Image 1: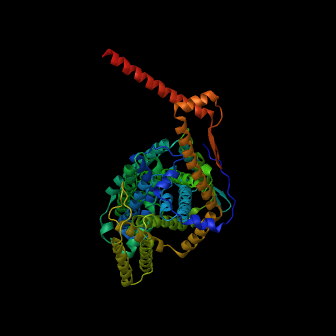
Image 2: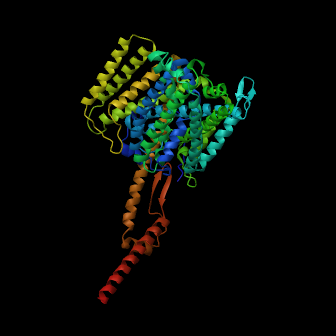
Image 3: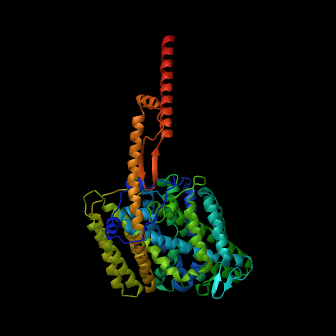
Length: 611
């Protein structure tokens, strides 16, 4: 039944804010609250793997390798990709444990909600919304350029120039088409994504098969690591963002048929495939062209043109188009599922949580996601916000890694103090930041070693703390080293960003906290009241059913010719009334049971007579 949403007034209630901001629920409480408007479970392991591959392996695979090899790492970009893939895997394993523990839509928002409370969860969701929407819009704007190149036109031929603004109707049409598929159904969307992802992978395999025969080993062996160790890690910081997207699998957790089995496969499997492809692609371009001559804008297309194969450059453009389609589609899918859970919690309007009975999809959330992405892609050049998206994404990864540590060493109701593990997590964050800044700004190796030694001591000290909670279905391997190293890599990447990114991030976080204090906290409190009343209503219904289960109650109702309500529970979301129709249904069920019992007794009597 649709819930009627009444918009909360925008006002600041300090007492309510402090009551809700840091109150964390248990996993069981969170699962119980997500029981309404559930999404159908239609995604298997392969569906989730292809969602992950489609979101990770986009058009960036054809561009980032050239930038990292030419300007940062040289042929050692292969090592940069391996390091970045390993760093992403550390966070991905924490995501897998999180998603299996709480397999409902919303991904990191739910996990942080039960770990650090509602305010921290809202800041995570606030940054996820920015990341997914802007990323989808930015990638969609690249669709027109690659499509024009594929058709033999200038990259800007499909855009409209209005003054200094470049309007992009092709991006709007792409987003509208993909939104329509997502509204149609999750399974249909998964099949479409799988087909397009296969075409994208086929184009990558084609590039490898055609590119490696053009290889010259001397291009790599002559000067494998021209920029040194710092260059390798700087390259890893840049190409790390090519691995973002595995978290979209966690956002689809509620639709997984077997979360304990399929979610780890989807998250880790897609990331492993992406890492292998990236390493091979970077090795291929470095073998084809000396790193000083690699084109930073279109490395593979330029390399094929240099080797006299313009037709192969067209295939590269086709692969980029397919990669854009899958990236945008999986982004829209992940964002709509995040809006569903925010609507359930009333941090956003409740209508966003409604799931269509006909299609099994959240239509309002999907349409809102598509509309926002299309509007941004049509008019804006998203490049100026790229660093803001990056630091927001890294913040989400950081909270998931920290939450994995915190959840193991502290459990609500256990009587244990959270201070030791909080102090350890804070120490890991600060020493990781110190390592990153000393490394980035060229401090002596002694300073770098000191920060790493402090980090190692804090990590080892975690082994002295008693574990309060152990997940039953999937556990992060090599605990606590995996989440601790995830914090180290994530903070290193955050430290490599510039001060403008930190300033924009601070402004964005302040805006998010203001939104929560003035709007979200009131809606969440209203949802809490409604949830408690719904629980009371279910208890009342079970009590009524128990009272109606006796034949004497039915005979009494028959004699009285009862046609009114048994009882009602007044709720702000509507009045739930158990009326005559409910009584008649209970009466009919009881009469059927009585007839069945009478038939069994007659049958037993007949068998006894025969004997």
